[in-house]
Structures are given as C-alpha cells and as structure tokens.
Length: 340
Ligand code: NDP
Ligand code: GDP
Image 1 (cartoon, rainbow, N blue to C red):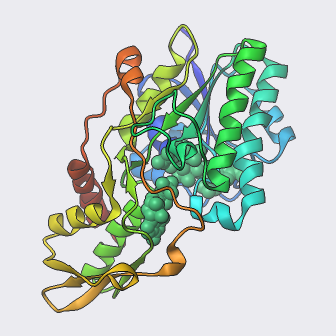
Image 2 (image 1 turned 180 degrees about the horizontal axis):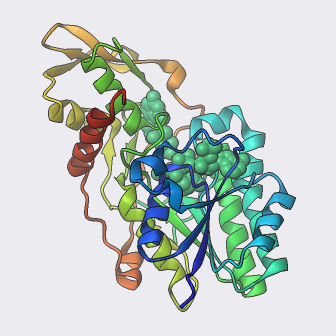
C-alpha cells in the first residue's frame, strides 16, 4: 500500500517534531515545512533522531504562492497546520505580523485546499488562549470564546475560518483546541521551559537570578508528546469535528516553580509580596527568582482549565502525564543536554 502523505507546517517547532516522530512510526511520508532557507532551527528533529527522515520544503505562511507550489508538488492526504507566531507576549509587540501568519496563514491554506484538492484533510492548531477571560469554569468545545491578545484573536480567526470551510465546502477541516502543552522541546521563551532552563543555569553558576512576570496565572499543562496523537486521531474520524485537549487540572506558575526547585533539591523560601516577591536559595541566601513588571502582559489570561470529555469519549484520548511527572521529564533532559 502507498504511504500516506502528511504535510506538517511548523516542522521546526515543538509539536512539529513530536508529530513527525509519531507519524513516521505510523509509516507516513512527511513533508515538513518551515520558513528558512538556511536550516538553522533543527535541534528538535535532531534530538529525536528524525532529521533525515523528513522531506523539507520552504513555505512562508505569509506567501500564498509558496503554499500553492507545495500543494501542487505533492499528493497530500493530511495537513497539520502547526506553524504560527505562537508566543502571546510577542503578539502584543507584533500584532500585524501575528495576524498575518497565525490568522491569515490559516485562510491561505484553506483556500489552497479548496482550489487544488478538497479531499485533503486539514488540522488547525487552535488554542485554549481563545477562551481568554473565561466564561465557564472548565472550558469545552461549547464555551464562548473571549480572546485577550492579538495571538488569541488570530487563533479565533483561524478557528472560525476552519469551521466555515467545513460547513461551506464540505471539506474535512477540524480544529484541535489544545491547552498548554510542554516538554523538553518547548521554546525557551515559554514560562515552563524558561523556569527550568533558568534554574539549571543558576545551579551551574551561569545565571544569578531569573526574572518572571505574573506568577499567579494558572494554566492547564499537559505533555506535548501525548497531545500530538490527538491531532492525528481527529483526522481519522468519519465526521470532522473540533475537540478540546487538556488535562482538566490547573496550577499556578508559582506552584510549577515549587515543583521544579523540589525536584532539583534546591532549598528555597518565598519572601515579600507583589512586585517584591522573591525566591531565596537558603543554601547561600541569594535571590534566585524575582518579579520584573515589564514581563507582565498588557492583558492577562488569569486561569485556564479544560474539559476534554468529548475527546476521551470519541477519540479515546486520555492524558497520562501529570505535572509532577512532566517537571521530572523536563528537568532530566535539561540537565542531560545542558551546554551540549
Ligand atoms: P512553536 O513556536 O514551537 O512552533 C511554531 C512553528 O511555526 C515553528 O516551526 C516556526 O518556525 C513556525 N513559523 C513561525 N512563523 C512562521 C511563518 N511566518 N511561516 C511559516 N512558519 C512559521 O509552537 P508549538 O510547536 O508549541 O505549537 C504548535 C502550534 O500549536 C502553534 O500554532 C501554536 O500556536 C499552537 N498551540 C500551541 C500550544 C502549546 O502549548 N504549545 C497550545 C495551543 C496551541 P521557526 O522555527 O522558524 O520559528
Ligand atoms: P501562554 O499561556 O501561551 O501565554 O504560555 P506562556 O508559557 O508564555 O505563559 C503562561 C503564563 O505564564 C502567562 O499567564 C504568563 O503571563 C505567565 N508568565 C509569568 N512570567 C512569565 C515569563 O517570564 N515568561 C512567560 N512566557 N510567561 C510568564
């Protein structure tokens, strides 16, 4: 039987790497696209040992002709649109670029599929950030969206466009509304990886003090490696449908820090309040974490907590890694690969 062909946009990102690994194990041919000509950002695929198993193509999501070129070149079965300007803080600084890539980029792909081959199945990487200032205690597929950043607004655009192309043109187009998912392959700017890398640097005397923003925000964090299987499952159903993917548990950034310091055997103590709150290393009385007000966001999403009952029931998808296990996985790999 001929191999199925999957196109993954954002192959150089965290999810792109894990999804490629997952689909290679299912014997897919992978077309992986990124926006670079000089291939500089391939450490994740390298780490997973799959760098040479991907067919690379350049495809800037801002350029319709580049997207059309790739779709004409290959006989694609499934598209996973993971490429995005994906960092909320950057989206406040670059709202136009974020809207163009994270929002309009989705529409460019949908238009291309519509005109070239409507049988291609399409997965859109929607985000729990779309719930923003939440309307339900636990957010499900039915919860009203209330985005709070240019990133989240761009994701809402992509989400509704995907829904609209499914309804209007009968395309198999779905969105996975994924809550935060982390791993050793997470970008260094995101808070979990920033904390763990920062603490490992401090232990190695390469950093004195880590600066953070709002440590009282709460997130529903899962393990990225498990989340990519849900993307694939969504494209294997008879009927196209959107699903929430989450753990159903939520914890603060401060709680995450406490788990990480404990696992690293650092004896610490929180002192002070508000902007003066600090984490002290009790071994040498030095401040190792402090608050920098510049790292607060113009509009914050205080809490997210997902309800993925539909995915459990219809996709047989269940999260297995709790936050403590996730911290262990991330810390162990951070130490293993530090400075290598
Ligand atoms: P990453 O930031 O790790 O990866 C994003 C990818 O998009 C990178 O490969 C990046 O390339 C690429 N990209 C950025 N701009 C462009 C552009 N203009 N044209 C083409 N490619 C571009 O994100 P994740 O892997 O963590 O997430 C995957 C998707 O899921 C994203 O869309 C994200 O918004 C969404 N999502 C993620 C969640 C999470 O917790 N991780 C939660 C919910 C949704 P480069 O390497 O060159 O920067
Ligand atoms: P997001 O949920 O997609 O925005 O993922 P992030 O990991 O970037 O941020 C998660 C939460 O951590 C947000 O509420 C941030 O405001 C909060 N946070 C606090 N300090 C920091 C920081 O220094 N960096 C980042 N990225 N987030 C921080």
